[in-house]
Length: 151
Image (cartoon, rainbow, N blue to C red; front, top):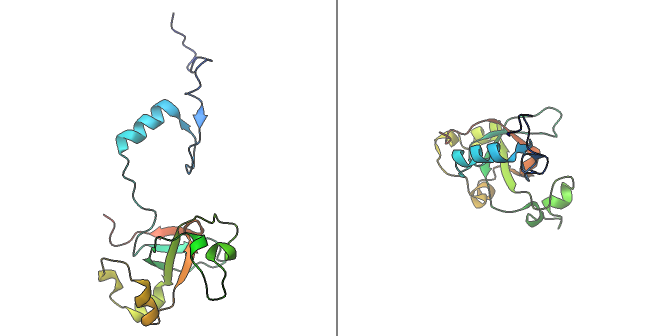
């Protein structure tokens, strides 16, 4: 006879909540994983060129624009003093992805039509044009407005 308790039989462990790495909430394995698979594996990137973000640690956050995602981890970005971004931001993982940002008002001053661009601004161009920028661990930023490039 079928058990009608509303839960999984005690010998089944696949129906217990499970928190996959990087997920904010636990999943019920069978149903939620099946629904995730239906959605497809193509995830939208967390940050792309043109996203407006805030520094989660700023007392009074300002609008920052993602201008480059160099494909480096925090322990790979080295400053002139020899420290890495991971050294300067010890509460974030050393392998966190680096996001390069510029304050919105600064970017509008240097590149008034930045919103017409369809590609990130290369780091060497930021340096050559003397556009102020800063690297952040991705986990220190929160997207507050989507880029003009997102559908």
